[in-house]
Image 1 (cartoon, rainbow, N blue to C red):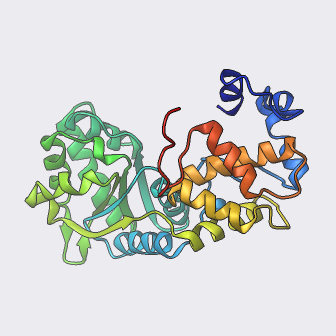
Image 2: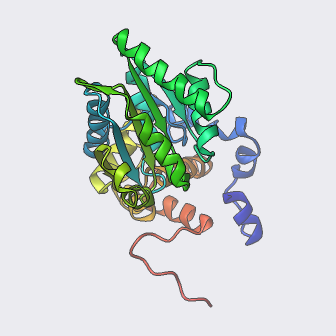
Image 3: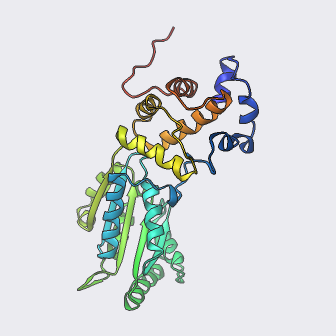
Length: 303
């Protein structure tokens, strides 16, 4: 943390920083200082903060297509912090307005039997073992289909699934289909290695109807992202200079989660310095104290 780094290096913090960083309540006091109504850079995937970059919009559109067209499975991958879970939350918000029954498994590192039972329980279907779970899920999918609803299962952090039996049981779920399409759609979300894991099982990989991979944002997307989050948080003016945004982009390598962390600390430090805007020097201080080296810049040689 910023305060810890200052203490370890015996550097005197700017006046007021310790008192503002002493507790969560005091830390968010920067909201009034910067004219904001709520924290703009929390790493919580609130749908209203969803930033519709071209690629995030494309990921959401493809996922929506997979569900509405009743595809068997959709695969969304991306590096840590690229916004996969944010896309999923935006999709879940959209599905709440549709004729969809949803199960959302946020950590699927379970045995095949336990995973099937977890999905079954989320659909409020009675089950006590793998066989009853399979029967229950087939019944849910068929009944939803007759009611003109669709059954969707989200498997977030799916790269933790390393048991081939789990993939085989999920594949068998996709045998439920009719002439109009699958009765159930599986949405797999995970880190890049998930693609290789799925491709290593051809009989399962062939069921993935649509795929999309999220890349880090470029500079212009990063700049729009920061403006967007400040606006949603109630901001009415630019708070970061262009040079500050350029440095943030390089340091975060376009990863939204890291951008959020840097911006949040920069606003806290900027308040303690009574700055009017966050400039490059303020961001540099945050990066130094957090031990972050901007992309493309070598680590300094040890003294």
